[in-house]
Length: 589
Image (cartoon, rainbow, N blue to C red; front, side):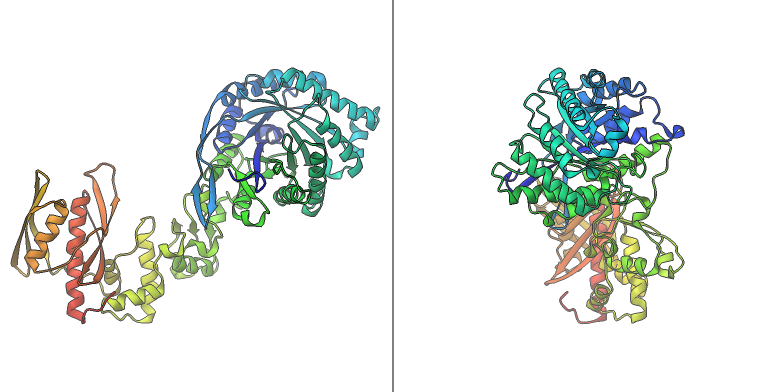
């Protein structure tokens, strides 16, 4: 990890099994046993804390206990991901057991029931709360004044610490904090953070009504960070954000809160490191009361892509590749459909129905209309071209998914012109677009570039090979390889032989063919193998780059095993070179 003065640790607290579960309509309740399955999927993403339920509500304690005794006892191997220099990279793997927590009102009996449900976890947690806005306090505790409510909260937190001990993670939330009077909020936060008997681990500041703007949340979290630092608990208390999405601002509000924690720490000259920031989220897209909680997938995308915009590095331990699979699993358990337009994980986030978009993607790759590769977040491909009102014929001829993302992974019009001219072919400009589309379609899904031989076939049609391998035999004895071949052309046979090499059978074959045809080509290290079936002797493809007198040509062929594929590709390259010589004076590629 980087210097703590330059890094902010971001923890993820998942609410799917609690706020998500309680918000589902009767017909879509998670079935029996589903909470364990959902918590397991959530944990595999690298989530730090799972809120498994509300143990004091509707007999949820048994389901919470089941999660604690299964997922809460398991050690998960997490491989976090990050984006570095425009590429997704894997960070150092870690073994991790998530905290399993339950929600309880600031009530002694509810806290007892919650701890009984979570104590089967290796890392149990109790999350308790009270209302801090005047309207909520008046509605929920009409016979109590502010002082009595605060005393009730502190007593509840102290009791949670007493029964849970030092190993239990205690979180305190100020319900409706964003609509609370700032003076009242300060009083509750300072009291909870500074109480030596309670010693809370997390102070949570929710936008319970989804009413705040990013600017307001930034100002609130600046103040909260200041209060935590002034109380001397910056290295012990996690500052947490729980945002509802009523105004579709939950992700922005969470990001703004993270910025505030970093900037306030810097402004106050904090010398011991930036406090840890916690984002409370749902892995089930838009699950949670009303419009749901902060959605994990777009939040992770923002943290990964906007790292340079933070005044400190972000330490986020999530495997982004699992996000789409997890949200789809949760939706299936609830019997609901994932909105195809759901940010980051929705199926239509990779769909392109505009002719302008499809045409550009076919020519320049999926990155033309995607800031980041959707496959980094769990999609099976980077783009899907579908028919639309303004879709052109090229788009319609190439409907379907493509994994092509980076521009250099596809062949462009300029490259078609340049490479065909180097092969002695001058195609008409009207043919360039169709060649480009055809080339990219043929290579779609294969991790290789288009070969010269295929490019020539697109431009002038497939030609019969001038040279054909009629016979070959290769053997290796005591590390020494030999080969005998017979190459035919127009009924004339050209025998070749090479004996006693130490570079393997492919090298011996190449030298035998070179002897037969008085050819001085070499494939050197320029071989890329593409297994098309499982097994070492199964069907394979080989992309070879053949050089002769400083000139280069590429050819692709398939065969039974990599040796056979390489031999076939080498023979294709020889024929391409011969045809090129026949058409023009050879020029350097």
